[in-house]
Length: 486
Ligand SMILES: *Cc1c(COP(=O)(O)O)cnc(C)c1O
Image (cartoon, rainbow, N blue to C red; front, side, top):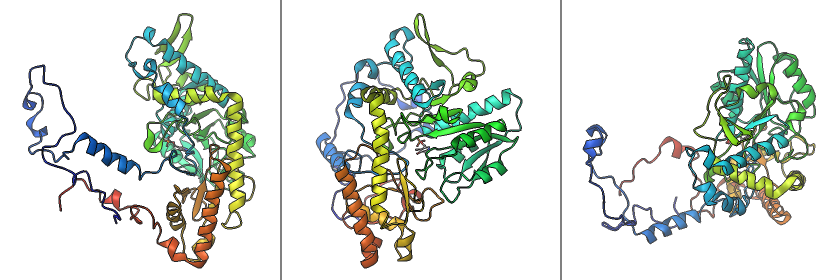
Protein backbone atom coordinates (compact mmCIF):
# COMPACT_ATOMS: atom_id res chain seq x y z
CA UNK A 1 0.00 0.00 0.00
CA UNK A 2 1.36 3.44 -0.95
CA UNK A 3 1.43 5.92 1.91
CA UNK A 4 2.34 8.93 -0.14
CA UNK A 5 1.35 10.09 -3.54
CA UNK A 6 4.63 9.75 -5.42
CA UNK A 7 3.13 9.29 -8.89
CA UNK A 8 4.24 6.68 -11.36
CA UNK A 9 6.25 7.98 -14.28
CA UNK A 10 3.23 7.23 -16.49
CA UNK A 11 1.05 9.43 -14.32
CA UNK A 12 3.45 12.36 -14.81
CA UNK A 13 3.03 12.16 -18.58
CA UNK A 14 1.98 15.29 -20.50
CA UNK A 15 1.32 14.57 -24.13
CA UNK A 16 3.99 16.01 -26.43
CA UNK A 17 6.52 16.72 -23.70
CA UNK A 18 9.96 15.28 -24.28
CA UNK A 19 13.18 14.84 -22.37
CA UNK A 20 15.61 14.53 -25.25
CA UNK A 21 16.54 16.21 -28.51
CA UNK A 22 18.26 14.65 -31.48
CA UNK A 23 20.40 16.43 -34.02
CA UNK A 24 18.87 16.47 -37.51
CA UNK A 25 19.37 13.29 -39.49
CA UNK A 26 22.40 13.63 -41.76
CA UNK A 27 22.13 10.21 -43.45
CA UNK A 28 19.35 8.85 -45.68
CA UNK A 29 16.38 7.68 -43.64
CA UNK A 30 15.79 3.92 -43.67
CA UNK A 31 12.33 2.40 -43.32
CA UNK A 32 11.99 -0.28 -40.65
CA UNK A 33 10.30 -2.53 -43.20
CA UNK A 34 13.54 -2.49 -45.21
CA UNK A 35 15.56 -4.03 -42.40
CA UNK A 36 13.09 -6.09 -40.29
CA UNK A 37 10.45 -8.71 -41.13
CA UNK A 38 7.01 -7.11 -40.60
CA UNK A 39 6.16 -9.73 -37.97
CA UNK A 40 8.76 -8.10 -35.68
CA UNK A 41 7.58 -4.55 -36.21
CA UNK A 42 5.31 -2.99 -33.58
CA UNK A 43 1.81 -2.30 -34.93
CA UNK A 44 0.81 0.28 -32.29
CA UNK A 45 2.83 3.07 -30.76
CA UNK A 46 4.65 1.97 -27.61
CA UNK A 47 3.04 3.46 -24.51
CA UNK A 48 6.00 5.48 -23.23
CA UNK A 49 5.95 8.26 -20.66
CA UNK A 50 6.36 11.79 -21.99
CA UNK A 51 8.29 14.01 -19.59
CA UNK A 52 10.80 16.82 -19.56
CA UNK A 53 14.38 15.95 -18.63
CA UNK A 54 14.08 17.78 -15.30
CA UNK A 55 10.85 16.05 -14.31
CA UNK A 56 12.40 12.72 -15.18
CA UNK A 57 15.53 13.45 -13.11
CA UNK A 58 13.38 14.43 -10.12
CA UNK A 59 11.32 11.30 -10.49
CA UNK A 60 14.34 9.01 -10.38
CA UNK A 61 16.06 11.00 -7.66
CA UNK A 62 12.92 10.67 -5.51
CA UNK A 63 12.88 6.92 -6.15
CA UNK A 64 16.60 6.56 -5.40
CA UNK A 65 16.12 8.29 -2.06
CA UNK A 66 13.87 5.41 -1.03
CA UNK A 67 16.51 2.85 -1.83
CA UNK A 68 18.82 1.32 0.70
CA UNK A 69 22.51 0.96 -0.11
CA UNK A 70 25.81 0.76 1.76
CA UNK A 71 26.28 4.49 1.19
CA UNK A 72 22.97 5.27 2.92
CA UNK A 73 22.94 2.85 5.85
CA UNK A 74 24.16 -0.29 7.61
CA UNK A 75 23.71 -3.40 5.48
CA UNK A 76 24.68 -6.50 7.50
CA UNK A 77 23.68 -9.03 4.84
CA UNK A 78 25.51 -12.22 5.85
CA UNK A 79 27.55 -13.97 3.17
CA UNK A 80 27.14 -10.98 0.84
CA UNK A 81 29.83 -8.72 2.35
CA UNK A 82 28.15 -5.36 1.85
CA UNK A 83 31.20 -3.33 2.81
CA UNK A 84 31.95 0.23 1.85
CA UNK A 85 33.20 0.66 -1.72
CA UNK A 86 35.91 3.35 -1.58
CA UNK A 87 35.29 6.14 -4.07
CA UNK A 88 38.91 6.17 -5.23
CA UNK A 89 38.09 2.87 -6.98
CA UNK A 90 35.54 4.74 -9.07
CA UNK A 91 37.97 7.54 -9.98
CA UNK A 92 40.58 5.06 -11.16
CA UNK A 93 38.08 2.96 -13.13
CA UNK A 94 37.09 6.18 -14.93
CA UNK A 95 40.63 7.06 -16.08
CA UNK A 96 40.17 7.53 -19.84
CA UNK A 97 42.98 5.05 -20.51
CA UNK A 98 40.89 2.37 -18.78
CA UNK A 99 37.36 3.50 -19.49
CA UNK A 100 37.74 4.37 -23.17
CA UNK A 101 39.62 1.38 -24.52
CA UNK A 102 37.98 -1.39 -26.52
CA UNK A 103 38.66 -5.10 -26.04
CA UNK A 104 39.17 -5.53 -29.79
CA UNK A 105 42.04 -3.02 -29.84
CA UNK A 106 45.42 -4.37 -30.85
CA UNK A 107 47.40 -5.73 -27.88
CA UNK A 108 50.19 -3.27 -28.51
CA UNK A 109 47.81 -0.36 -27.75
CA UNK A 110 46.49 -1.70 -24.40
CA UNK A 111 49.67 -2.86 -22.70
CA UNK A 112 48.89 -0.80 -19.59
CA UNK A 113 45.49 -2.41 -19.11
CA UNK A 114 47.03 -5.83 -19.68
CA UNK A 115 49.73 -5.07 -17.12
CA UNK A 116 47.06 -4.15 -14.58
CA UNK A 117 45.27 -7.46 -15.20
CA UNK A 118 48.53 -9.38 -14.97
CA UNK A 119 49.47 -7.63 -11.71
CA UNK A 120 46.03 -8.25 -10.27
CA UNK A 121 46.37 -11.94 -11.10
CA UNK A 122 49.75 -12.00 -9.35
CA UNK A 123 48.29 -10.33 -6.25
CA UNK A 124 45.45 -12.87 -6.17
CA UNK A 125 47.95 -15.73 -6.58
CA UNK A 126 49.75 -14.38 -3.52
CA UNK A 127 46.55 -13.87 -1.48
CA UNK A 128 45.13 -17.34 -2.25
CA UNK A 129 48.34 -19.41 -2.35
CA UNK A 130 47.46 -20.73 -5.80
CA UNK A 131 49.81 -21.04 -8.81
CA UNK A 132 47.82 -19.18 -11.44
CA UNK A 133 44.64 -17.09 -11.67
CA UNK A 134 42.19 -16.30 -14.48
CA UNK A 135 40.12 -13.12 -14.37
CA UNK A 136 37.56 -14.28 -16.93
CA UNK A 137 34.55 -15.42 -14.84
CA UNK A 138 31.92 -12.73 -14.44
CA UNK A 139 30.81 -13.51 -10.88
CA UNK A 140 31.02 -16.03 -8.06
CA UNK A 141 28.72 -18.74 -9.38
CA UNK A 142 30.36 -18.42 -12.79
CA UNK A 143 33.76 -18.94 -11.15
CA UNK A 144 32.46 -22.04 -9.35
CA UNK A 145 31.26 -23.50 -12.62
CA UNK A 146 34.51 -22.60 -14.41
CA UNK A 147 36.59 -24.37 -11.74
CA UNK A 148 34.35 -27.44 -11.80
CA UNK A 149 34.63 -27.64 -15.60
CA UNK A 150 38.41 -27.58 -15.17
CA UNK A 151 38.23 -30.37 -12.56
CA UNK A 152 36.07 -32.34 -14.94
CA UNK A 153 38.55 -31.84 -17.80
CA UNK A 154 41.38 -32.90 -15.48
CA UNK A 155 39.65 -36.17 -14.52
CA UNK A 156 38.67 -36.89 -18.12
CA UNK A 157 42.26 -36.35 -19.27
CA UNK A 158 43.27 -39.00 -16.71
CA UNK A 159 40.61 -41.41 -17.96
CA UNK A 160 38.79 -41.00 -14.62
CA UNK A 161 35.33 -40.75 -16.18
CA UNK A 162 33.69 -42.57 -13.26
CA UNK A 163 34.16 -39.45 -11.07
CA UNK A 164 30.63 -38.12 -11.31
CA UNK A 165 30.03 -36.92 -7.73
CA UNK A 166 30.66 -33.55 -6.13
CA UNK A 167 30.36 -33.42 -2.34
CA UNK A 168 28.78 -30.29 -0.83
CA UNK A 169 28.11 -29.61 2.88
CA UNK A 170 24.48 -28.88 3.80
CA UNK A 171 25.51 -25.40 5.02
CA UNK A 172 26.94 -24.44 1.59
CA UNK A 173 25.81 -21.46 -0.45
CA UNK A 174 23.05 -22.52 -2.86
CA UNK A 175 25.23 -21.72 -5.85
CA UNK A 176 27.55 -24.65 -4.96
CA UNK A 177 25.15 -27.52 -5.72
CA UNK A 178 23.72 -25.49 -8.60
CA UNK A 179 27.14 -25.02 -10.23
CA UNK A 180 27.99 -28.70 -9.74
CA UNK A 181 24.74 -29.68 -11.44
CA UNK A 182 25.27 -27.29 -14.36
CA UNK A 183 28.82 -28.70 -14.76
CA UNK A 184 27.23 -32.15 -15.20
CA UNK A 185 27.94 -33.67 -11.77
CA UNK A 186 25.66 -35.33 -9.23
CA UNK A 187 25.82 -33.62 -5.85
CA UNK A 188 26.11 -35.49 -2.57
CA UNK A 189 25.22 -33.60 0.62
CA UNK A 190 27.59 -33.79 3.61
CA UNK A 191 26.10 -33.26 7.07
CA UNK A 192 27.06 -30.58 9.54
CA UNK A 193 28.10 -31.94 12.94
CA UNK A 194 26.82 -30.67 16.33
CA UNK A 195 29.66 -28.13 16.49
CA UNK A 196 28.71 -26.53 13.16
CA UNK A 197 31.65 -28.04 11.26
CA UNK A 198 31.81 -30.72 8.56
CA UNK A 199 30.78 -34.12 9.95
CA UNK A 200 33.98 -36.07 9.24
CA UNK A 201 32.37 -39.47 9.78
CA UNK A 202 29.67 -38.62 7.25
CA UNK A 203 32.31 -37.32 4.83
CA UNK A 204 34.31 -40.56 5.11
CA UNK A 205 31.30 -42.71 4.22
CA UNK A 206 30.60 -40.63 1.12
CA UNK A 207 34.04 -40.34 -0.52
CA UNK A 208 35.29 -42.90 -2.99
CA UNK A 209 36.42 -43.66 -6.52
CA UNK A 210 33.43 -41.74 -7.86
CA UNK A 211 34.38 -38.50 -6.03
CA UNK A 212 35.29 -35.73 -8.47
CA UNK A 213 35.54 -32.95 -5.90
CA UNK A 214 34.52 -31.50 -2.56
CA UNK A 215 33.31 -27.89 -2.53
CA UNK A 216 33.98 -26.14 0.75
CA UNK A 217 33.69 -22.67 2.21
CA UNK A 218 36.12 -21.94 5.06
CA UNK A 219 35.12 -20.32 7.30
CA UNK A 220 31.87 -22.03 6.41
CA UNK A 221 28.62 -20.16 5.95
CA UNK A 222 27.94 -20.44 9.69
CA UNK A 223 31.01 -18.21 10.12
CA UNK A 224 33.02 -21.04 11.66
CA UNK A 225 36.52 -22.10 10.70
CA UNK A 226 36.87 -25.77 9.72
CA UNK A 227 39.58 -26.78 12.20
CA UNK A 228 40.05 -30.18 10.57
CA UNK A 229 40.66 -28.63 7.18
CA UNK A 230 44.01 -30.39 6.57
CA UNK A 231 42.41 -33.73 7.39
CA UNK A 232 39.42 -32.93 5.15
CA UNK A 233 41.59 -32.04 2.13
CA UNK A 234 43.69 -35.19 2.79
CA UNK A 235 40.60 -37.39 2.80
CA UNK A 236 39.58 -36.09 -0.64
CA UNK A 237 43.10 -36.28 -2.10
CA UNK A 238 43.55 -39.84 -0.80
CA UNK A 239 40.75 -40.99 -3.12
CA UNK A 240 41.97 -38.90 -6.07
CA UNK A 241 39.42 -36.07 -5.80
CA UNK A 242 40.02 -32.33 -6.00
CA UNK A 243 39.12 -29.80 -3.32
CA UNK A 244 37.44 -26.57 -4.30
CA UNK A 245 37.41 -23.47 -2.08
CA UNK A 246 34.42 -21.16 -2.26
CA UNK A 247 36.28 -17.90 -1.65
CA UNK A 248 33.37 -15.57 -2.36
CA UNK A 249 34.10 -14.01 0.96
CA UNK A 250 37.73 -13.83 2.02
CA UNK A 251 37.14 -11.33 4.80
CA UNK A 252 38.08 -13.71 7.60
CA UNK A 253 41.22 -15.21 6.14
CA UNK A 254 42.92 -12.65 3.91
CA UNK A 255 46.59 -12.20 4.93
CA UNK A 256 46.12 -14.78 7.70
CA UNK A 257 45.77 -18.17 6.03
CA UNK A 258 45.58 -19.17 2.38
CA UNK A 259 43.38 -21.73 0.63
CA UNK A 260 46.50 -23.03 -1.14
CA UNK A 261 48.14 -23.80 2.20
CA UNK A 262 45.02 -25.54 3.50
CA UNK A 263 45.30 -28.12 0.71
CA UNK A 264 42.79 -26.68 -1.76
CA UNK A 265 43.37 -27.22 -5.49
CA UNK A 266 41.33 -24.31 -6.77
CA UNK A 267 39.37 -21.31 -5.51
CA UNK A 268 37.07 -18.63 -6.79
CA UNK A 269 36.98 -15.10 -5.36
CA UNK A 270 34.24 -12.52 -5.50
CA UNK A 271 36.06 -9.28 -6.20
CA UNK A 272 32.66 -7.60 -5.76
CA UNK A 273 32.55 -8.73 -2.12
CA UNK A 274 35.92 -8.88 -0.39
CA UNK A 275 37.66 -6.54 -2.82
CA UNK A 276 35.07 -3.71 -2.72
CA UNK A 277 33.49 -3.89 -6.15
CA UNK A 278 29.97 -2.45 -5.90
CA UNK A 279 27.41 -5.24 -6.20
CA UNK A 280 23.80 -6.20 -5.88
CA UNK A 281 22.11 -3.42 -7.81
CA UNK A 282 25.46 -1.66 -8.07
CA UNK A 283 26.98 -3.31 -11.08
CA UNK A 284 28.53 -6.43 -12.55
CA UNK A 285 30.74 -8.77 -10.54
CA UNK A 286 34.05 -10.48 -11.07
CA UNK A 287 34.78 -14.07 -10.02
CA UNK A 288 38.44 -14.89 -10.72
CA UNK A 289 39.52 -18.50 -10.32
CA UNK A 290 42.87 -19.60 -8.93
CA UNK A 291 44.33 -23.07 -9.48
CA UNK A 292 47.26 -25.21 -8.42
CA UNK A 293 49.77 -26.36 -11.04
CA UNK A 294 48.05 -29.51 -12.26
CA UNK A 295 44.90 -27.61 -13.25
CA UNK A 296 46.76 -24.85 -15.14
CA UNK A 297 46.49 -26.55 -18.59
CA UNK A 298 42.68 -26.39 -18.32
CA UNK A 299 42.40 -22.65 -17.56
CA UNK A 300 39.97 -20.75 -19.82
CA UNK A 301 41.69 -19.26 -22.84
CA UNK A 302 43.17 -16.92 -23.77
CA UNK A 303 45.67 -16.87 -20.91
CA UNK A 304 47.40 -13.59 -20.22
CA UNK A 305 51.18 -14.11 -20.37
CA UNK A 306 54.18 -11.87 -19.89
CA UNK A 307 56.88 -12.12 -22.55
CA UNK A 308 60.10 -10.25 -23.28
CA UNK A 309 58.12 -8.11 -25.77
CA UNK A 310 55.31 -7.30 -23.33
CA UNK A 311 51.92 -8.73 -22.38
CA UNK A 312 50.18 -11.13 -24.70
CA UNK A 313 46.98 -13.23 -24.85
CA UNK A 314 47.94 -16.84 -25.47
CA UNK A 315 45.30 -18.82 -27.37
CA UNK A 316 47.49 -21.84 -27.94
CA UNK A 317 46.18 -23.87 -25.01
CA UNK A 318 45.07 -27.25 -26.38
CA UNK A 319 43.71 -28.57 -23.05
CA UNK A 320 41.84 -25.38 -22.11
CA UNK A 321 38.14 -25.67 -21.27
CA UNK A 322 37.73 -22.77 -23.74
CA UNK A 323 36.45 -19.28 -23.26
CA UNK A 324 33.92 -18.69 -20.45
CA UNK A 325 33.26 -15.00 -21.10
CA UNK A 326 33.56 -12.65 -24.07
CA UNK A 327 36.82 -10.70 -23.91
CA UNK A 328 38.75 -10.75 -20.64
CA UNK A 329 36.34 -10.58 -17.72
CA UNK A 330 34.62 -7.53 -16.27
CA UNK A 331 37.60 -5.25 -16.63
CA UNK A 332 36.12 -2.25 -14.77
CA UNK A 333 35.51 -4.32 -11.64
CA UNK A 334 39.01 -5.71 -11.90
CA UNK A 335 40.40 -2.16 -11.99
CA UNK A 336 38.45 -1.38 -8.81
CA UNK A 337 39.75 -4.48 -7.02
CA UNK A 338 43.30 -3.70 -8.12
CA UNK A 339 42.97 -0.16 -6.80
CA UNK A 340 41.68 -1.50 -3.50
CA UNK A 341 44.51 -4.01 -3.10
CA UNK A 342 47.13 -1.37 -3.94
CA UNK A 343 45.66 1.28 -1.64
CA UNK A 344 45.35 -1.16 1.28
CA UNK A 345 48.69 -2.93 0.91
CA UNK A 346 49.47 -6.17 2.79
CA UNK A 347 49.14 -4.58 6.24
CA UNK A 348 45.86 -2.94 5.29
CA UNK A 349 44.40 -6.22 4.07
CA UNK A 350 45.46 -7.91 7.31
CA UNK A 351 43.73 -5.16 9.29
CA UNK A 352 40.59 -5.71 7.19
CA UNK A 353 40.52 -9.35 8.24
CA UNK A 354 41.13 -8.56 11.90
CA UNK A 355 38.45 -5.88 12.12
CA UNK A 356 35.91 -7.96 10.17
CA UNK A 357 36.35 -10.79 12.69
CA UNK A 358 36.43 -8.47 15.72
CA UNK A 359 33.26 -6.65 14.63
CA UNK A 360 31.37 -9.91 14.10
CA UNK A 361 32.40 -11.31 17.48
CA UNK A 362 31.56 -8.06 19.25
CA UNK A 363 28.02 -8.08 17.87
CA UNK A 364 27.58 -11.80 18.44
CA UNK A 365 28.39 -11.48 22.14
CA UNK A 366 26.19 -8.40 22.57
CA UNK A 367 23.22 -10.19 20.98
CA UNK A 368 23.79 -13.64 22.53
CA UNK A 369 21.64 -12.98 25.64
CA UNK A 370 18.64 -12.00 23.51
CA UNK A 371 18.66 -14.49 20.64
CA UNK A 372 19.47 -18.19 20.42
CA UNK A 373 23.10 -18.69 19.36
CA UNK A 374 23.30 -22.22 17.96
CA UNK A 375 27.11 -22.38 17.79
CA UNK A 376 28.83 -20.84 20.77
CA UNK A 377 32.49 -20.73 19.72
CA UNK A 378 34.07 -17.52 18.44
CA UNK A 379 33.02 -16.76 14.90
CA UNK A 380 34.98 -15.41 11.98
CA UNK A 381 33.59 -12.60 9.79
CA UNK A 382 29.93 -13.48 10.30
CA UNK A 383 27.64 -15.33 12.70
CA UNK A 384 24.25 -16.97 12.63
CA UNK A 385 21.54 -16.41 15.24
CA UNK A 386 18.35 -18.42 15.44
CA UNK A 387 14.95 -16.81 15.95
CA UNK A 388 13.69 -20.03 17.55
CA UNK A 389 13.02 -18.36 20.94
CA UNK A 390 10.96 -15.62 19.27
CA UNK A 391 9.16 -18.16 17.11
CA UNK A 392 7.73 -19.77 20.28
CA UNK A 393 6.10 -16.38 20.97
CA UNK A 394 4.60 -16.26 17.50
CA UNK A 395 7.14 -13.96 15.87
CA UNK A 396 9.17 -15.21 12.98
CA UNK A 397 12.61 -14.19 11.71
CA UNK A 398 10.89 -12.65 8.71
CA UNK A 399 8.99 -10.34 11.10
CA UNK A 400 12.21 -9.33 12.86
CA UNK A 401 13.79 -8.56 9.49
CA UNK A 402 10.80 -6.40 8.53
CA UNK A 403 10.89 -4.59 11.88
CA UNK A 404 14.55 -3.68 11.32
CA UNK A 405 13.40 -1.63 8.31
CA UNK A 406 11.63 0.71 10.76
CA UNK A 407 15.04 1.44 12.29
CA UNK A 408 16.53 2.24 8.87
CA UNK A 409 18.57 -0.94 8.49
CA UNK A 410 18.81 -3.39 5.68
CA UNK A 411 18.01 -6.70 7.40
CA UNK A 412 20.56 -9.50 7.73
CA UNK A 413 20.32 -12.59 5.54
CA UNK A 414 17.39 -14.71 6.71
CA UNK A 415 16.54 -18.43 6.53
CA UNK A 416 20.08 -19.29 5.43
CA UNK A 417 22.04 -21.46 6.12
CA UNK A 418 19.27 -24.01 5.92
CA UNK A 419 20.47 -26.12 8.83
CA UNK A 420 19.63 -23.37 11.36
CA UNK A 421 15.99 -22.88 12.33
CA UNK A 422 14.72 -19.32 11.64
CA UNK A 423 18.27 -18.25 10.78
CA UNK A 424 19.48 -14.65 10.94
CA UNK A 425 22.94 -14.37 9.42
CA UNK A 426 24.82 -11.21 10.31
CA UNK A 427 28.00 -9.92 8.65
CA UNK A 428 28.92 -6.43 9.85
CA UNK A 429 32.17 -6.10 7.78
CA UNK A 430 35.23 -4.17 8.89
CA UNK A 431 34.17 -0.82 7.46
CA UNK A 432 31.57 -0.08 10.18
CA UNK A 433 32.29 1.95 13.31
CA UNK A 434 31.61 0.70 16.84
CA UNK A 435 28.84 3.32 17.11
CA UNK A 436 27.04 1.81 14.10
CA UNK A 437 27.43 -1.72 15.46
CA UNK A 438 26.06 -0.59 18.83
CA UNK A 439 23.09 1.21 17.32
CA UNK A 440 22.17 -1.88 15.33
CA UNK A 441 22.54 -4.12 18.40
CA UNK A 442 20.35 -1.69 20.38
CA UNK A 443 17.67 -2.01 17.70
CA UNK A 444 17.87 -5.81 17.75
CA UNK A 445 17.63 -5.82 21.55
CA UNK A 446 14.64 -3.48 21.46
CA UNK A 447 12.95 -5.79 18.95
CA UNK A 448 13.64 -8.82 21.16
CA UNK A 449 11.87 -6.90 23.96
CA UNK A 450 8.92 -6.01 21.73
CA UNK A 451 8.49 -9.69 20.82
CA UNK A 452 7.78 -10.33 24.52
CA UNK A 453 5.66 -7.29 25.31
CA UNK A 454 4.04 -6.17 22.06
CA UNK A 455 4.50 -8.83 19.37
CA UNK A 456 2.00 -7.19 16.98
CA UNK A 457 4.33 -4.27 16.35
CA UNK A 458 6.90 -6.75 15.03
CA UNK A 459 4.42 -8.99 13.23
CA UNK A 460 2.92 -6.06 11.36
CA UNK A 461 6.18 -4.26 10.55
CA UNK A 462 7.36 -2.27 8.73
CA UNK A 463 5.42 0.83 9.80
CA UNK A 464 7.66 3.69 8.69
CA UNK A 465 8.57 2.70 5.16
CA UNK A 466 6.95 4.04 2.00
CA UNK A 467 5.28 0.71 1.41
CA UNK A 468 4.02 -1.59 4.15
CA UNK A 469 4.66 -5.30 4.23
CA UNK A 470 4.72 -6.81 0.80
CA UNK A 471 3.60 -10.21 -0.33
CA UNK A 472 7.01 -11.90 -0.55
CA UNK A 473 6.36 -13.72 -3.80
CA UNK A 474 3.57 -11.92 -5.59
CA UNK A 475 5.79 -9.55 -7.57
CA UNK A 476 7.64 -12.53 -9.00
CA UNK A 477 4.53 -14.59 -9.67
CA UNK A 478 2.25 -11.90 -11.09
CA UNK A 479 4.51 -9.23 -12.56
CA UNK A 480 2.85 -6.12 -13.99
CA UNK A 481 4.02 -6.24 -17.59
CA UNK A 482 2.21 -3.17 -18.76
CA UNK A 483 0.84 -0.10 -17.05
CA UNK A 484 -2.76 0.67 -17.89
CA UNK A 485 -4.41 3.88 -16.79
CA UNK A 486 -7.08 3.30 -14.21
C1 LIG B 1 27.86 -14.57 -2.94
C2 LIG B 1 28.33 -15.98 -2.80
C3 LIG B 1 28.42 -16.83 -3.91
C4 LIG B 1 27.91 -16.45 -5.29
O1 LIG B 1 28.49 -15.32 -5.84
P1 LIG B 1 27.75 -14.51 -7.01
O2 LIG B 1 28.74 -13.48 -7.43
O3 LIG B 1 26.51 -13.96 -6.41
O4 LIG B 1 27.45 -15.49 -8.11
C5 LIG B 1 28.93 -18.10 -3.70
N1 LIG B 1 29.30 -18.54 -2.49
C6 LIG B 1 29.22 -17.74 -1.39
C7 LIG B 1 29.66 -18.28 -0.05
C8 LIG B 1 28.72 -16.45 -1.51
O5 LIG B 1 28.61 -15.67 -0.41
